Length: 239
Image 1 (cartoon, rainbow, N blue to C red):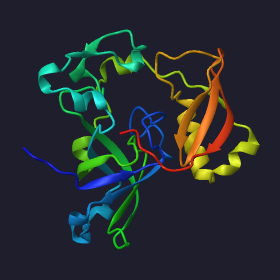
Image 2: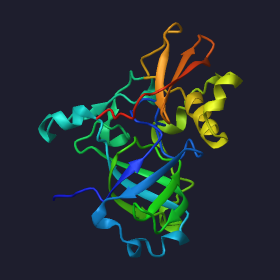
Image 3: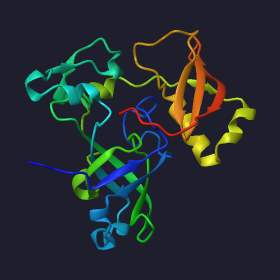
């Protein structure tokens, strides 16, 4: 089967660093689905404004490990960050990006749809966990009666939860962002964007977000302090 992207995602995150580990956990986070020229037909979205959520099928395009290896070299187990990166679980029991086929699935909320712009139809969504310029292969409406299973078990996820951080964001550094963007950024930082194996309280991290490098430290008492906001010279992509 040969498939080609129908769209790409426009996001505040030009690299993987800092992207929420699941869709929906930063509900304020804004993004946009921008269709490829072939699919810029508003008729293809007819009726979509009657739904609140979408499923997005996309590619882990920044995962160079996936690009460099074939199915023959796939690994049956991975180490989920939620378990501290020390416990192995079956790859098909996780949402790890290190899969035989680098396909992602996300549920996002439709904020609004613009049916006619200079870029064709645009779908503005909230809560996505996609990097900027991520290829999208399909979208499907979320249907409550079939997709909602509130009493379902979630395996090891039910017993482990991310430890959220206290965020110290000096007021004079907040001016770079709109209220909505600032709210989303603070939520992203509270979820601890570091790789699971990092715990150095003296290290200064830099997370690209909306054209800025957000520099911060994390102390041993789980307090994240934003230390500097640096304007990026240009947009870039970790691809």
